[in-house]
Length: 413
Length: 88
Ligand SMILES: Cc1cc2nc3c(=O)[nH]c(=O)nc-3n(C[C@H](O)[C@H](O)[C@H](O)COP(=O)(O)OP(=O)(O)OC[C@H]3O[C@@H](n4cnc5c(N)ncnc54)[C@H](O)[C@@H]3O)c2cc1C
Image (cartoon, rainbow over all chains, first blue to last red; front, side):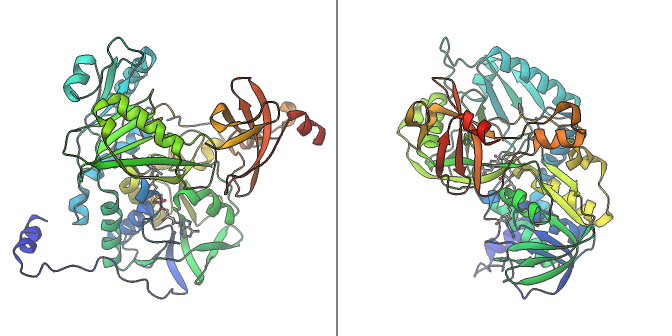
């Protein structure tokens, strides 16, 4: 990587490498069909081609590459969850991010600057102690800090001493970070297509041909494609797409919104999140302050953003950092998120033998782009679910073995 | 601000209301298999189309029902819960 960069810098004409080939003709059949060209689908394609030698792979994307939630997320990467199964999985995810630029030979601008979650009530401080203990037990860097610790980590915060929203302490997660979301998707796409994976943009799956307990083919706007194995990784459309195959997932769709300010000089050096205010902030490498919060208040298939949410997020952000009050907003947007009852994803087998699920990523799936792709590729290649994914099986709802990550997700993603 | 017409209080700003999610059929606890309980608890309606759902007007703590389009977000009608019982 550094050598290539040097060569590039010294070359006279700055050669541009063609990133991803234009969409080819659809073949009648592929060994693996991946539905959804977001980060997850592309990561799985990369891992199939690079580590399992499976190259007859088609990624079918109804729109443009990574234009779904991958393009809309606020790029929080962390592993400070609460269930041992959850922490083990997301920890592997963070570790893969640490090496991702090397793996992809593409700078994903991973910045492991740490995440600070704020407590404004004693109850939140207690829940932080539990998360810190679990995190330490599982080998992640997660600790509770007091008021002085919060001030040291983020000196510009309004501590609101004596006020109704006084910051009583924080959960400091040194492993937390952020990365450039488009770069992650494009890096995987470039690597996968270099190894023979076909990426078909503007190719929408509109139905399944099911015979017995197997998917024979998928039906698209560009024709029928027979498939050995199929993966559903369609983000906000997971419920919808699985239903076309007769699989009803325990998912409800909610819009999730975010917004960014005009670019400012670097001043926010950690990710900051407030549970009570339902607001979190991160400064991007362009200097824009990305502000996100909780989901919309009711179920909806819509990517329209609302004035209510703009006001709510602005209120939270200005409360934490009052000097932001004169700063202008540049953009606001929304994505449709596929929420599960326990705030954990659904990965692994489906009721159909060759249909695999990488679903239920709701408001928290960007951080899992590398690890979900890696583990789903392993699942598809070996035809069985590895131990690390077993707790996330669809059957957990039937056996009442839920993985409750609601408290560790709330405003933090 | 979006308006929601409460059957009791008339049209109000939607942030005076709280959504309680899709209406679910009641199950008979003595005649329900585990599988059906799990369905009942975890698989709420999410199809694109018209959803019948519970809402509460928070200041008056009045629960009622609405039919709303999950794609356009249009609120088609609101009605008192007694009408649901009548229908059932
Ligand atoms: C505002 C917002 C903030 C978020 N913040 C964070 C965060 O800070 N950290 C975090 O970890 N996660 C976050 N998330 C969640 C995260 O964005 C997602 O979980 C993750 O990006 C999912 O990736 P994916 O590849 O599975 O889905 P997507 O990126 O949505 O990709 C799915 C693709 O499937 C395509 N598709 C859909 N239907 C079809 C069809 N029928 N045929 C073919 N293709 C189809 C879509 O066009 C889309 O491109 C956030 C989400 C939002 C909306």
